[in-house]
Length: 261
Image 1: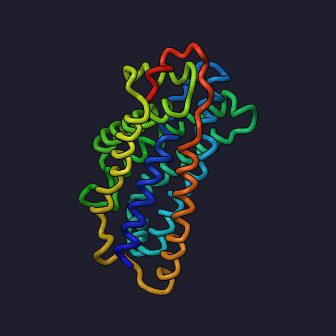
Image 2: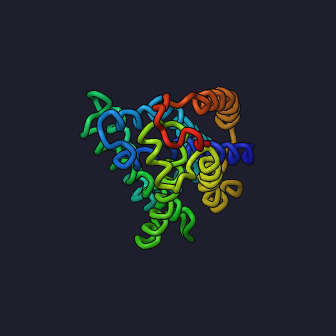
């Protein structure tokens, strides 16, 4: 059961990085992709329908960590790692507030919160990964290592968001996404960045003592794992249907109409 729990934890985190990471990348790119109100609303519309489903993978990963690896979760919480987790959670809340800001699709205030929260969230994930890969994984990584890793992870989120934008957007926002990548953003680039995003949390999982002494045993684990396994097909089906959804209609003068992949 411990191995099943570890695989589920890695799988849920990988799914969130692929799907939720695409939303974060779009949020980071919002000022570039959307130059006016209607374009920004189109970019928001590309991420809003599935963002709650994408967050469900992160909630499931947290349930596995707390329910199946309580000793490890306590060890991480007892150290200074919350100095990383708290800003990461604040960035997530900031982005959520911007995404659901009241008004016509958020307005300028909501856009500012969404963009700021997306950038901070990507950098925070990089700092957290650097901390988990450090020699003492319950302490924050040094500022320099966290900054370098945060910048690298942020660049990956941007590339992932560009590929997603080329799949989901139309008109000028779609053209800008293709222009920034030399006309290469699209299905193939999104698949490539998806593979990298899926692998991003796995080194930290191998670094943590998941199978050594941190796994829980008892009735709670025996109830939680079957419940999560039962919901897995539902989550997977919902995501497949969402990703297969048709993008908005392109204008007839779209110069990339014939080259869009």
